[in-house]
Length: 173
Image (cartoon, rainbow, N blue to C red; front, side, top):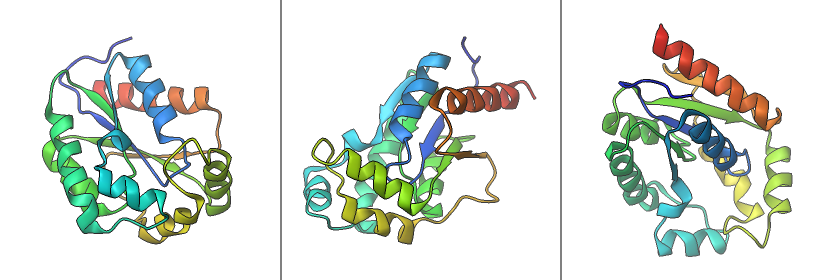
């Protein structure tokens, strides 16, 4: 299946542990779109901070968001980006680089996010101590245009189907 161009790209967003990477990869594969792993573009200083359990600041994230915005504008288009995009300002920065950009928000409880992050401890740079800071930073995208809210605890296949159906419906409307 391929959604025809012109088509806006997609950001799969949410706090750490919500399943951004898995869903973004699945949606990209289902649609034949390019996948961008947001975490792969963090600089060494940001990675070191997160490994130490130090939350990132807006200043820490600025260069990272600029890099992701550039990535969204590079061919081949469209693309699916996994990115926390926790604040409205971060989402707006990405929107400015990719007009019509859509967001799939994986909504999860703090307890479930902590459980998931703890389960991957040792294999991921993000520490369980940072989960609370993610929720403190999160500005929910409720009411923003071009956002699909998803229950992060739903089955991955169901989530992928929901996103693909939403994007396809949006493109043909």
